[in-house]
Image (cartoon, rainbow, N blue to C red):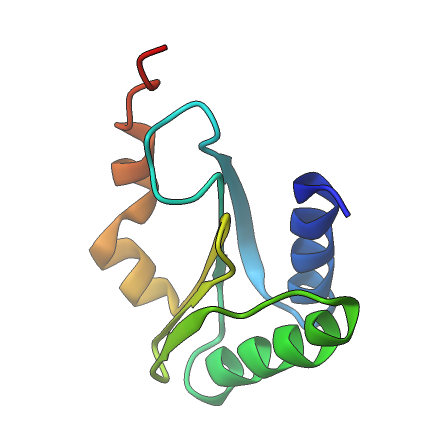
Length: 110
């Protein structure tokens, strides 16, 4: 599967389980640690963890490797190597403004 196919699968899974405000950032032309970042809102609490569990249950059988994850009821960050997924409550997303940070990344020098 291409990275686009993998990102599409992530977005579809999150959307099917009612994640909101899903955004994808293509960072392949920057020096960021990942090529793609997916950010999604949860309703909070158990929904945050449930979205993460659903990703694992759907993606691992397809061969996706989960290299690491940090979990709380307000924020889960998942490292898939070249893709990072953030599932956050709206309050955490607003507070940490990851989108703003990602938009400041400069293209890598050739």
